[in-house]
Amino acid sequence: VLVLCCGGAAVGGWALARGGTDTVGQVDFVRPLAVPPLATSRVDGQGRRVFDLLAREGRRDFRGDGRLTRTAGFDGDFLGPTLRAGRGERVVVNVVNRLAEATSVHWHGMHLPARMDGGPHQPIRPGATWSPTWTVDQPAATLWYHPHPHGATEEHVYRGLAGMFIVDDDREAALPLPRRYGVDDVPVIVQDRNFSRSGQFKKTRNMIAGIGVLGDTLLVNGTVGPYLDVTTERVRLRLLNGSTARAYDFGLSDGRPFALIGSDGGLLPRTARVDRVQLSPGERAEIVVDVRPGERVTLRSFPPDLGAGALADRFAGGADRFDVLQLRAAGTLAASPPVPDTLVPLDRLDPASAGQTRRFTLAGRAINGRSMRMDRIDFAATRDTTEVWEVVNSDGAPHNFHVHDVQFQVLSVGGQAPPPALGGWKDTVYLAPQRPVRLILRLTDHSDPNVPYMFHCHLLYHEDAGMMGQFVVVEPGQRAGRPPAPAEHA
Ligand code: C2O
Ligand code: CU
Image (cartoon, rainbow, N blue to C red):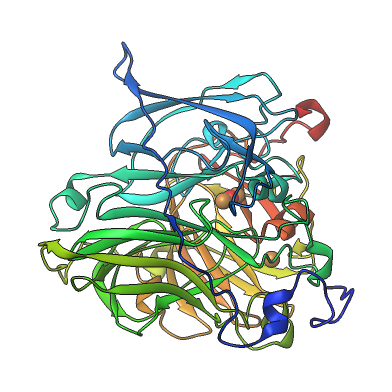
């Protein structure tokens, strides 16, 4: 049950909601959008692609007023480089922790062995290096990475630890889509922050009815007030909601439609022509926007539809509008081929083939009434089986649902067929209050019966507060083991 500490309008740091007009979140577009560099890599003697990633503290003047914000980032002050690997490649990432405390790095959306997953069971002590290795085996997609330390994910992500991980494959490469990184294929990592008077990231979570931190300033790839010079007729934006709590409903300032081509786990089967795409924390969408020579058009976030319920509307950004990114088209644009209608084939998983149906109710700080415990595995799924999961948000707060290791398909939302944005592979899905979402997923690789994967709400404060559980994937007849107790991991 949520505890409301204060009324919406009276809360400090809630400037946007107080304004309540179309001008909220308006910015002057004065800075070129920072594009995260592509991580360099090398191929080792075993043919593995090796990356190095260094988590460290930093400082940055985000607003150009001389006030330095204490931050954290990978290989830099804030966020991290974009990792990129092809399907079938074996990768190694040497993650060095130069922070003063333990952290972890989770590969959100990646199919990989549980020991490599970077969840709370794979902490990296200060000064230590963790070197997970796995073979990328999933379709081309926009994934991401972020810390997942037990009880402190929100804190680490809020300080700036996150980055994108792009998977490539032959199918995607064969399509006439924009793919010149930083030119017509651009990461757009959207995060909200509050700044204190001295310029520090302010954690105003307690004011927001237990939802988490809702900031009044958007950072896009760490840039406040960003513009992007567009030199081609079409630009592909890889949108990632990297915020800890806020949902966005992205659209263009003049309402023009755009091509929605991808979701969390890769390209959609068909291009959807839409004028909005809504993302809750952790979700991604790939869109292609058409621009005309010389024009300026703004990517905005409109008030998201969080579902019926006063709490959702008042406390999760349901009244907020933000300017996100201005696109500035050059006077002459290089030609881009039209976006194809048909993208990649999708094998629909068949609910009739599901051996198990599981139900998950999210409420308060728990799932099915149980709060996350490091030493309790909530269930064991059998390798090479298909399962249907029915997930419902049964309190009035906004929640979403993320599953590690697998990409799922959405069968229905509130009993209805899913919209096109939920028509492909997903790993995170928004849960409007009281509207059950049915998912179908296939558990393939065998994990270690003692090393679980997580499922949780991706509003990071909820996750940290216990709205998370653990599962393993085992051989038929095998039972779940028992993970080591948290103390052994400290
Ligand atoms: Cu993006 Cu379990 O996390
Ligand atoms: Cu939640």
